[in-house]
Length: 410
Image 1: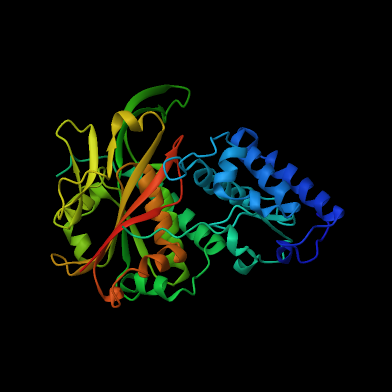
Image 2: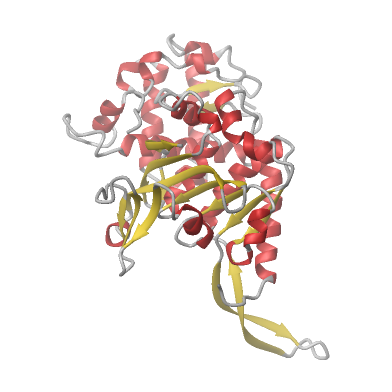
């Protein structure tokens, strides 16, 4: 059991006592010894640096450029826009801290948190909640201004879908909390107020494998046969979990179907969330006539989101050769619109690659991101169709936080 600390969240501008520092450092050691951190060098270095300086109230050193120089050895004049190593690392650390506290046995421990938009860690006892006002205003990052398939064997997918549904139910009630943000509610209103269940349509992949079967009359006799399995990509589960939390917390029912088993009749039956782009034909069909839509070269080596108003603009492009290096920028399309062909609302969460899809899923359930989006939106945006272009930095297969680049309302 961790020694109880007194109102630690209120002490971001004050000095901690030696006892409090000891307790915090002991908890830091526990966190860094966990599997989420022990296999990395970068994340422990970052978290130790920001913790030690926060305990001494040296908040002037907990800014992006300073962290890039001191922790990652960048040059003093390095371009933080072109090299987002600090932001990406902070985002990953937030995820790993959450992962640590989700594991059994850590319920009574001192809580570490790294508020979004800040590099100053906060500490609290399990019964305390660190308020947003505890983050010093000078530590907040600046705002960003908007600029027919073959027949497949179905049973394995049904098993995956059932397991995914259980995950959605558990995560929805344990980790997601309803937002009081009015913009967030308005964004989701078409889905939450529909009379029909929401259809979650996720891409599926056909894989071939072998399974071993036993003879019913002689169980010791075995034979190996080829079997076709239909699976979903693990990165697509992230948006499923995120959106499932929103729907469950608002008492909204939903159904999960694979892309290859979804029909036009299904889309006509109620509102739909489409996850994934190039592996989800329904996403490509539904967005094909929109201003922002997916495109690629004939060789399928370059993929991009095209702006029909400026087709020559290729800023939102991924080259597969660059992607395979492991460090690249991914782009995503988030759309919410009334489909004139089905007379139902559709929400799209789709990246060019997997990292973009993960970022799109995060954006959909982040009330702060949606509220920021509305600042440059038309006054009656909640009654309009919309398309949003997001950017995320991917490093070693992990996507950073989404950043809004462009928006279109009609």
